[in-house]
Length: 544
Image 1 (cartoon, rainbow, N blue to C red):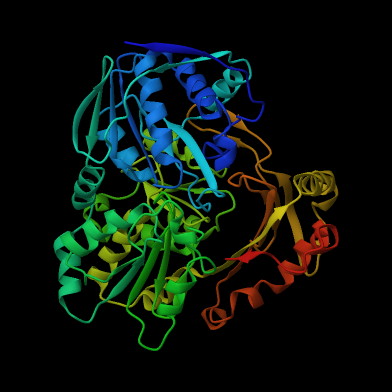
Image 2 (image 1 turned 30 degrees about the vertical axis):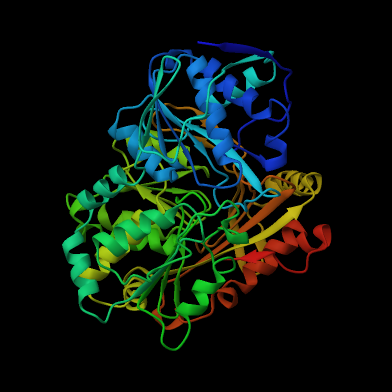
């Protein structure tokens, strides 16, 4: 083997965020930038020698080149075998699936999730551990520490692997298997859901749907499962071909960025069901005919209907939600007599609960839902869950949601995003909010009394690790909440997220427009943080 030891110097900005390291493509294309991070990962995980690694990405720009670099570095660092997706493609949930099914040591995922792609877009890399989930902070902190003092990396001099050919290849002493990235995942979905019943729903001839893959990774998975295995119409999957720039779109499945799907679902002859997924396939948006289901409501409704699903008929051990996610799931957990765990934002915080059998379903308000079948959120899984419920109940999406509200009450909920703010300005805003906290508890804001004002911290009930400064919370005596948090998924500037929630038990009030129901909280949130005054923004960039 011709292994090169290449001298390098550290970059100071390689600390992974909530979902790995994300930067602009051009940032990753700097000399040795990707290589430094990958070598720091290998140095952190010395026990990877001789082990199996899973590798793939969402097909965005720079994925193919990065995969070839990582393969040659893996061979130089004595990895035994790498399972890489055909053409380098792998959805994030499917990587988690293959890690678990093949008992791999871990996996490297190349994605910036819902962020835009292309030469001027974003790129990302993250490591998943042996349970299939994102690396915990103990690992990412160790990688970052090594990245600050790295002085060399190892790489094998070799020809590129033909990623467009299924088969087994060698790089030095390492085996590379180019595999079908869909097969294991699709088989798992067939184990969890009643495919015959869902197929029968499509066979009625009156049920139609659209799935918008947004020219991202989920297209091939959706075509295989929805159109081929379940018999949905051949034109069910929209924008189904993964493109390096995602067709110039922003692959975030929300009401703003999935506008073409929303338009189709709100027209006069709309189909029964609509859904979308994001860049790497781990997020989902659910729509009925002229009806949007919030991610928080979706989690609660899936939990309430889990007994209809073969994979969950034995019951749920518990539910876990991120702190900013609405409390709708808490009410279902209470009705089922199970615990609802409140964690920081970031799917990695669900891993210990899932591994310990404490939780079965998990969800985040940022359009992420999943369960103990994997250790990642899973967009297509959520769509299949909804399809299975619809196949059993034979009601519309809207009627299922409204019936749920009648029984459980409605949590009016919204997130206001202020994107691309100067990082220093955003940080000062949060710091000033922290300083106000001692004075806010017990204060009346409008007609509401603040009963809790804090910066959320979390003690993991399994390993007792502590995570602090996870979002400013203002909780009121009537179960309303305002939460302020800076997002950790962008690549430049900062995004301030303001979460607003109020509970309405009276069915006669459930038809209010969400922003109207939250109007007083919106005013309070701006008044307390002085958002308009400090940012110069008269309204949020995105409202979901």
